[in-house]
Image (tube, rainbow, N blue to C red; front, side, top):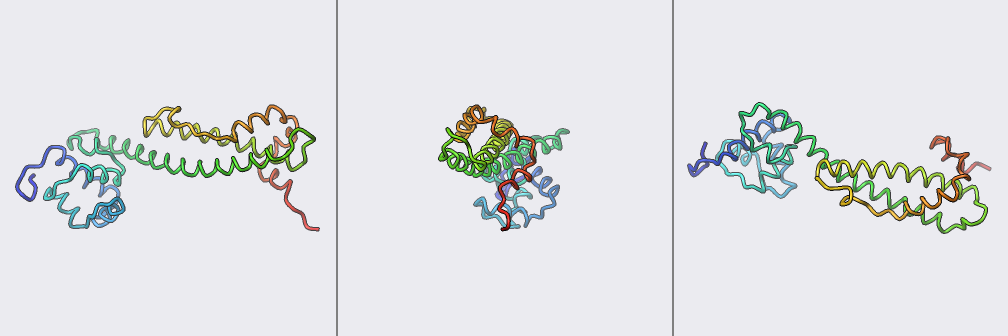
Length: 216
């Protein structure tokens, strides 16, 4: 297989374009579909471009290969392996899991940071109240929510760290997120836990209904 100038393609390019066509077809994409998916990444590809690449008539630059692999939910290492390998389908599946996992990691990080900002705001509102005296019904209610959110957030942060290690190879220390509300809520748990015991078994819906305004 040679390019348009008659130069032989390198082994990695030959393997890449075969895997590229196979993966594109397995995803149910036409050449036009793939070209459109690549354009947001800055590749000015059209159907004819994909056709020429898959025919071995246009060389693939390394940066282009990385982007094509990502869009096809694979990675460059997988797409440059020997096309005759019996493990190709398994490698495709593993690469797809890791690619989806990376997307999930970044989406989770964005949503989690937004949620934790709201958690910090709740904690600051509670901190503005006088917690050294008898607590009002509303303050006790808010503390119960604060502790529940803290528990869920802790699990979510653990999940994010595990996902980050899986897809990015980063350690827990590198993925830590500073959440001021965690320290505040932890202190309040030690001091005021006895005041919220009667709320602990309530469902979220029932707890939310406690302070809903009533008619009249």
